[in-house]
Image 1 (tube, rainbow, N blue to C red):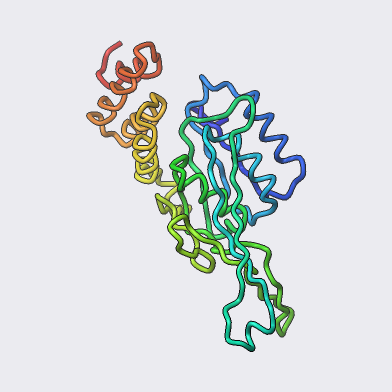
Image 2 (image 1 turned 90 degrees about the vertical axis):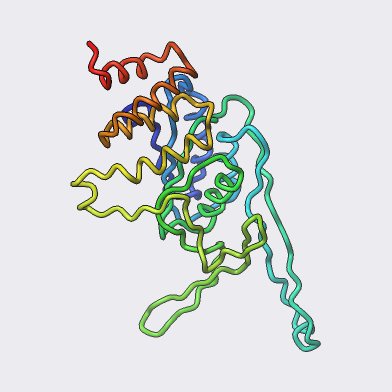
Length: 260
């Protein structure tokens, strides 16, 4: 758990057999009243099992969502000789909410150039269902089930063996998924203290979750750290309207207004 009630979860792959159970246990034991938001880090996740990914997704939704549409080429030699198109087998997985507790608060998914295959599917499903904000770099654009081709000198070339599509029908293999907020953080940014990227994320979170006092709290804090007193007060006041008993918002407003 990060400061201010933000839960950070790094998922390195979707291949570990016990990953689904560990995540389900995490959600089941989560204190929802103290968790202001969740960050799921998929930046170095190269994929794995759709079944494991579905278990994780089921703990983050309150309605069914669909993984990206996939089309698998079914090669028939005669079709090519006859000038006919390759037959495509279409599949799409529907994920439903898990039984028991689910986390439905503000959600950010971190992506990067190494985010591939099933990890891209998860990011896409959460993004296009309106469930999460994607932050980071464009993903790898690799649908999965790669075909490996050895190259001279010991190298290996690999390419996806099927096609995968956005909900609007656009193929994203070899293209990748562009995040809502593109961030390419350098060491200099970290040392200098970079607030603008955080502001962009929290603004988008407020738009996604206008009824969440935690979203306004986080945006207010980002403005306060960026020394924008007026907007910090405005967002903390919105948080108080949603929950007049919010002590964190009251304390922040006292500090901003110079009251003891």
